[in-house]
Length: 599
Image (cartoon, rainbow, N blue to C red; front, side, top):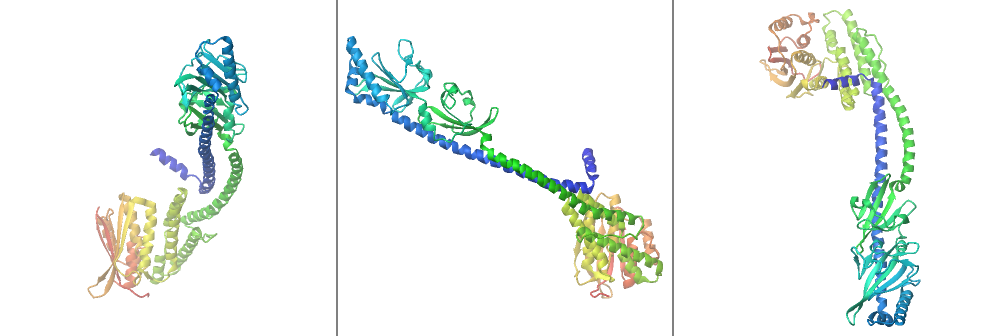
């Protein structure tokens, strides 16, 4: 709590002009910077989200295309059945001489060459047919490792069913071609449907360039990467040939296998994956995020330059506005301090017609009235009661003005602008009320409004320590009262109440009454829960009330002045009554005749 108070004191010690400059700058620079950051961030995220939704759709379409193309290859093994000579060789179980075996081998291998290694199937590297311990092979280039003698066959590990065929990956069979092209094997069993017997197995080695032809329709640039891998991360195809056959170890850390997500392995990258419906592989696509936001970064850099220029302009404007606002307030504050020392001959300059200008105008009028009243006090005798009454009702306490302006200044420093404007409005209305009506009487509504404004200003100062309630049971617009008869009573209640009470509550009632003589009267009843008045003070007040009150101007009791004015204006039958009990509060009742016309 002490730390917070110290922090607030340091903040209050900062000059108002500095606070305004900081406020203006913060209200322009921070929102602009925050807005620019949010716009850039949201725009970048929207691009990332759009690409993250768009690419998986393309990948799904590419997977469908791959499945369709491979589906066409499913019919290739069935072409074996169209050759009677090949079927005859495959069905032959008898022990043949060397010449017959060579002729059969030539027949089958020639057929494999003419059917599978044509220009219509440029991606097929070779065709292998195993039948009854016989190997028939036809390839575009030389090969190694396909056969039984080296122990490489039958193949090991799990195989995957692809329609009517099985799919083998290079690591499942020891087969390699010249120049080591990447491939996959499509496997299908050849069955003699007439005899319902197995005639052999056909293997088609498919070059992975087949995948490039299908995937070339995808939008790609030099920074994008595409690959096909199985569910364990084994790379079947990759745009970087060096990574073919290697494992993608991060596959087990991927949050999903269908959709897009972001990674940060050295640089932020957007990865999109699509799992094939029929085939056991996953199609992947990656692109650095910086490539997605290249145009956005240009806009961002231009925006930063514009922001710096606008921030400089806003700072200059804030300095000018702060100087415009604080200059008249500072001058008015210096003048008020001068007035507080007793110099009433100062000149109050007015620079504007806003709330500060209204305050300066009211203060100038107040000083003019005070100077006039002081002059009258020297020139007019005490018997000139009407002039003295006007002087009494026009006096304004400079301390109240100074304290109010101090409160306004603190509200501005605490950035409570609406509260400061409201207080200035209330103070301006009080000033207009104090100088606007030169008649002896004003409407009760105006007097009550004036005291309401006064209490609201005091409540701003003392906050929860002060509360009040006002009730009006008469026609306050059509009835009139002497001016400023409530404020002195309320001032005493606040002053002495808050000296000994943490909280003070004030109630004001305006009611009608019939006097014993049958005349209508107006009662102002003011109650408070203050410390009350001790017996010695009550005795002194009663003595002053019973004597000529105009001779006790320096008594310090506001009720004396109020009583004197009422008695001189309306006679001895009207005035005020005072009731008080120690530690229980005080009640003041002001009785006036019901006046419906101005005198």
